[in-house]
Amino acid sequence: MRTIFSTLLALCGVAILLPDAAAAQQRRAGYMSSIDTTVAIERGGVVELSHISGDITVTTWNRDEVRVVAFAERAQIISDFSRRRISLRIEDPDRDNRDNRGRDRSRRGDWIGESRYEITVPRGIRVVAATISGDVSVVGTNGQVSARTVSGDATVEDASGTVEVTSVGGDATLRRANGRMTVTTVSGDASISNGTGDVRASTVSGDVQLAAMRASSVEASTTSGDVSYAGPIDPSGRYNLTTHSGDIVLRIPAETRATVTASTFSGELDTDFPVTLAPASTARQRGSTLEFPLGSGGGASIALRTFSGDIVLRRPR
Picture 1: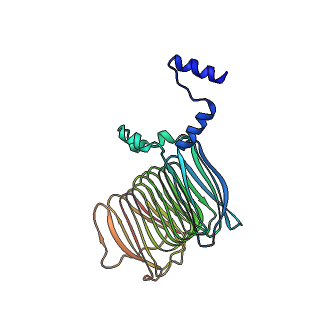
Picture 2 (picture 1 turned 90 degrees about the vertical axis):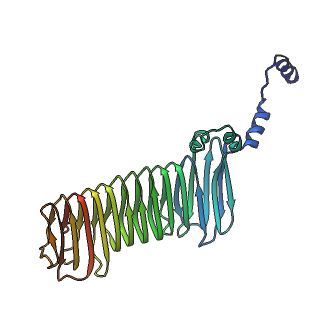
């Protein structure tokens, strides 16, 4: 009966794939690709995750294994598993044909459909996770992390060593980290809380927020937004906070010892600390550049610069 049915369709000029043949073609094309497995990894290993259009979520457990749950509706997941390195990436099985037809390669997310990575790793594992369109979240690894996205939010919690959190069109957030911390975005907020170590944080259109910090070196900047720092000041530290259009707010202990350079063109200096101008300080009719000591002076170097905004120094409440 099946043969007769197929013959009739052929005579009518209609071509179809029967269920078994359709499934076989999907497998050859790499469509509906999914992985659900657990593999062993050595301590000191690395997990590398590359995506195009979908979220990446990484959590932890107390096992020397990596649990991989990955799904791509209309693309192929390429995996490479070893004891030292586990990697996943997305590949378009029809990429060459799409490019030959002149399709815009920047819109590759259109053909992937629903897709995601959900990964569970041992604590201490290094994680490198990047997607073009989607959110990236890496929580609890207590190791080195690089989390990057172009269109989405990037969030990292509980990391150490070299930690990088980067977004272009979303927020970049880091919580509870120690080491060398870099948090950057273009159109969004860059924020770090409960961080210890060296900090570089920047955005173009958004705020930079550094809270509950114990940092010895800080470079924080934005073009359009506020910059804030809250935490103790290392006596030998360097702190540079800069914005073009926004306020700078510094919340530091009353016993802080530092030399402050504060510059604003069309704003005011508002401080809880007594200010005694150094002899080299200059003041202009509109705005000012002031240099003054906190405490007995010396100690840390703090530079606060804004073109259109106020500079505020506060003792913690």
